[in-house]
Amino acid sequence: MRVVCAPTLILISVTICCSLTEKLSNGSSPNIIIMLMDDMGWGDLGVLGQPSKETPNLDAMAAQGILLTNFYTANPLCSPSRAALLTGRLPVRNGFYTTNAHARNAYTPQEIVGGISKDEILLPEMLKKNGYISKIVGKWHLGHRPQYLPLEHGFDEWFGSPNCHFGPYNSSVRPNIPVYNNSEMIGRYFEDFKIDLRTGESNLTRMYLMEGLDFIRRQTEAKQPFFLYWAADATHSPVYASKSFLGKSQRGRYGDAVMELDYSVGQILSLLQKLGIEKNTFVFFTSDNGAALMSGPQESMSTFLYLEVDLNRFLLICVIMRFMQLHASGSSGGSNGPFLCGKETTFEGGMREPAIAWWPGHIKGGAVSLQPANVMDLFTTSLALAGISPPDDRTLDGLDLTPVLLNGSHQLDNRPIFFYRGNEMMAVRLGQYKAHYWTWSNSLEELKEGINFCPGQEVPGVTTHDQKEHTLQPLIFHLGRDPGEKYPLSVLSKEYEEVLRSVSAVVQQHQKTLVPGMPQLNMCDLAVMNWSPPGCEKLGKCLKPPTSAPWKCNWPH
Image 1: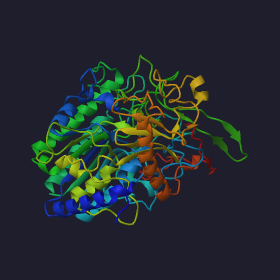
Image 2: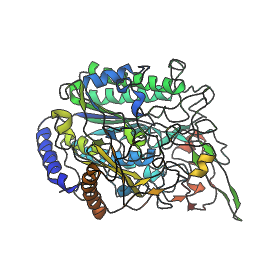
Image 3: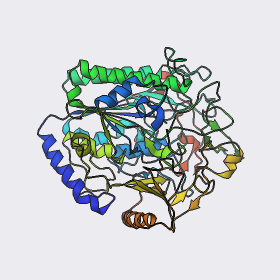
Image 4: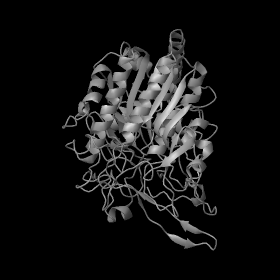
């Protein structure tokens, strides 16, 4: 029997999963498409209130499917959230966190030594049991060294990159990020795959669309069930769009990128209908974390600070990544709607995501679900749809959402949602209530430099600039009445006492049974960067790495 987070859910989730696995296994296995956007906010979709209404295809997808308004990621930063999706496990379990400092967000820049553990079982590995062919298009972000790449973890095909599209770099100091076709690089960002930082022009989203469409056509012709993980990253800084979309949005360059992604979603859904496989293809759209609202003095591309230290044989470069919002002349960031703060924080704006499920003939169109759900649920739900039992040798945090999506069930309404930042459980949601055990936006030192993760949204005692512990008396919000987390319940109220009693039991059980995985994001080393990726010899793009000199990565927030 697999283990889930709350003991009251164990019997329910296992019974649901087993019955659905048995039922679905008798029919054909549906194709599965997961569309994961990058830094797209809850409020970026017209159907969720974006006033410029520039997402007609996503709005139509919601009208034909089900809109999940209480859907969360597993971490407020890219790499851990993606690891959680593909393993069905919290980052603290699957190793995508750091113990170098308390409650720090960590990810997989070029200099990271680690990556997804060989002990983790990823979704495409499980889907192979029922003959699925799997492809990832876009950003991987679970480690760039050969042993961590997608084809080593169940994917059959890949077109995209292992890291963010930062750059351009001076190749003598830092290599440009490679782009892969399956197991070999076919070029590098800025060298062979252009991104114009001044204009924002790039054809990458168009390439990702073409790759996705081609994969769908080929597998349909082969009558092969498929899993497409479409992980486009145009809304991550530096934001980009193809020439035909630049200047089209009322929202600036970021809006241009959203419009092109929306168009791409429409093209994929249209192809499914044209091929006549829409009733046999489950499609889910969401984002990896909240929109980046970080205000700062410079453009929202990565800014690297280099500290040179003479270590006799080696020049150590300590890299601090800072994400900043573009000037008004360039691009504005995304919208998290009514929710507090954004990316990097465990407030609602950092972890509540847009989410739409689409499956004509199976999901009732125009439905809205208030079910609290999580990106990790996509792992377990996909297995249920494919008629595959989940692994029983590990704790899974994802639940099977098929009763909710297909039957409108309310059996899972009281499942908990945990909000982690690094190695610390910062908050938990249970029903309509959210209890903060720790609060922190970003440091006071960064704030003095003009970097703020909650610009224009400061809430005294809530958006704290030091790590504030509330373990003995958590801050509790009713998210139905107060989605912006501005007015905590009075600790003297009966409501507070009753909620605290329920939440405390869930937290105690979670912490009692939690076995953290080996942290993969602790060590950095310039020698492991993308100097000589597989395939570089054929292109004449191999670079000489420096001598290895590992250090503990510095994660500032």
